Every structure is written in structure tokens, then in C-alpha cells.
Length: 450
Image 1 (cartoon, rainbow, N blue to C red):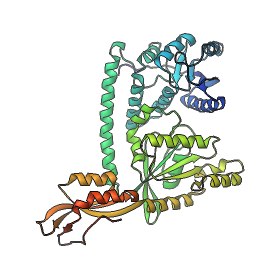
Image 2: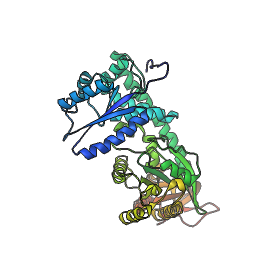
Image 3: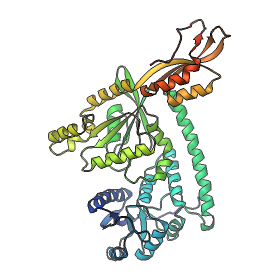
Image 4: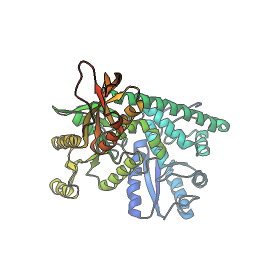
């Protein structure tokens, strides 16, 4: 995508001013606290914050003109290099604010994308992040080229690079098409990998960023997953075998953490990573119980699960970091009263893990049933339907006959399916209920089990 910026010498740390609007001042401050964490994660030093109570942002300048003038004064006085906005800015707002403030502007989505670009280490993560960045840039080209033409490095300018202004849209469109094709191939490869491992139950860890998912992953699987006390430490889906008991082994996946106002194009770009969530039998929703707004974080996670089509998957709520609570015994008792189905744990210290694994094993037994059936090899549609409704955990090519008809080849399919979809599967398999194996090692008639 053209030449990239190169900065020689030790880069100077950026100074940032945080700006947000909200109907209630307390909610604005909470959101700005999180924006401050994002800014620090991206490498900026926060020198102040400004909020304004508005029913909705000003369409021309985000804030009212008086507040914009106040910010301009602060920028000059404190030599602020970057103003970070807690919402997405329109191209029109950016143009007006740049004229008024005379410094670099970054909105929340661009800041999150920048952190993801810095965190991405694998080829898959880099591809997903680049696609999200380019999709974001398509409607903001003027803004980005202005920044690049000034040779401003740092937060918000990492990523796909620089192109000629007269060809930018065409080049970006071509690059987006290339990246999407690449991710489609990755999706196919991961689908093949999942089919090879379908004999195992699949469990995914979901939760707000920095809730302790990777720490729990390591505790349950004895894996070496990166676990750090920072936002978005994990971008790639990591899957490990986890032995719950002598009778149950699962595939446990750790995925990217969620956050409020997560850019939609980032969710779309990370489809192949989030597929690990969508194809799970059970989700473990891990919550940082020591966070003062953990219930708000729970709502964000549920909303994101709804957006990716995973809200209906059976979910085990886990309240983590109980060892960090004030008056732990009293607080845990209150949490159990408010969330009787939740499992309180301290993943870092191993507290509550035995209860967690026992509850998880019980859920897996209660939500899934296994069965077997015979499907003619010529009926690919029915086999695809079984895969759509559940998971195929074994296949064997056999000879079958139907009421004395000549023998034909069929697949003896073993499957696992959610109990609430068993009626739908029975209807799908009804046309083949008369098939019987006729091979020498013929077994009893195979039917849908319920």
C-alpha cells in the first residue's frame, strides 16, 4: 500500500487530552477512565480530560463552540500533541476540530484499532487488523492523508500505509478484496481443523478485556498463553486440550476480549477468530468481580455476543478476582445472592477451580446428546444439515439396504447435538429411517437417538 513512515531516534511519548460527552456526568467519567486506559496502552501520557453534558454530540464540532475554545486553550498551554475523543468522529467534525485545535485528533475506534495493530503478532491477526483499519479509513481518507502528509507518527497512524490521494479509494478497495479472500481461505482451513476435532466438546472463554480469561485458560489447561494485566493482551484465538475428569476432555479456547463501543468493522474483520465462540458447545463468561462497574461490563459482553450470534449458546457465569474484593467473605456472599448460578473464583490463585470444572462438566452432559444414523453417500444435503445442527464426531463408509433394495454405500455417522435441537434433527433424518447395514459386521438398525 505504498511507502510507510520511518521515525529515527527515540520516539517522543505523546501527550493526550481526553474528551467525551454524556447525558450524565458520572457515566462520562467512567467511560473516560476506560479511554485513559486505552491511551496509556497505546503509549500516551494523559494530561487531562474534558467532559460536556449533551443529549447527543454536536454534528459540526462534537462539543459546543465554547467548550471547543476551552480545549484549544488547554492544547496550547499544556502543549498537547493529541486530543482523544470518546466517540467516533465524522469527517466533517474532524475538519472543523482540526481547524480549531491545530493538533492531531483520534477517536475511540481509531485508538482501539491502533492498539490492535500494535498487539497483532501472527499473520492472521495482522490480516484481520489491517482489514478493519482499511474499512475504517474508507470514509475518512481526507483525515488520514492530512495526518500522513504532516509526517505525524505515533498513535493512530500505524497500519496499512500511505498512497497517492488520487488513487486511494481504488487501491484501498483492491486491498480490502485481497484481505477478505485471504480470510475466507483461513475460515475454510479452520473449519477443516474443527471437523478433525469434533469428537471433543468445545468451550470458549468470553469476557470483557482484562477480566482474566488467559489466566483462567492457563489454570485450566496448564498452557502457556500470554496473560498480562493490560487491555487486549490476547488477539488470536488459542485452543488447548483441557481434561475436566477421566471421562471428559474438552477443547478450551481463549479469544479476544470485548470492550464498550467496540468498532463494528473490527468485529466483522475478526470473524474467523470469533468463530471459535460461535461454534462452542458452552461459553464461560468470565467477569472481573473486583471491578466497580462489572455489571456494566457484563452487559457489554452480552450485547457483543448477541451481535455475533452467540447469545443463545449455554453460558456459565464465572466471577473472577474474588481475592481482590474488599471484605471478600461478605462480598462473595452478596454476589452469590445476586447471581446464584455463578461460580466465584480467583484464577490466579487457583481458588474455586474444582467447583468450576465440576459445573462445566455437568453443563456439557445436560446440554448435549449423542446419536448415530445412516446417510446415503449421495445425500450431501442431509449430511450438511447434521453438521449445521450439531457436530459429526465420527464417520464410517458402510453398505446399506432399504426394504430389500440393492445394497448401496452410506455413511454411518455419529453426532453430538444440543438437546433442544433433537426434534429438528429427527425430522431431517426421517427419510432414511428404513436403512439397514448389510455388511458382514452389520450392527443393529441405526436411528436418531434422543
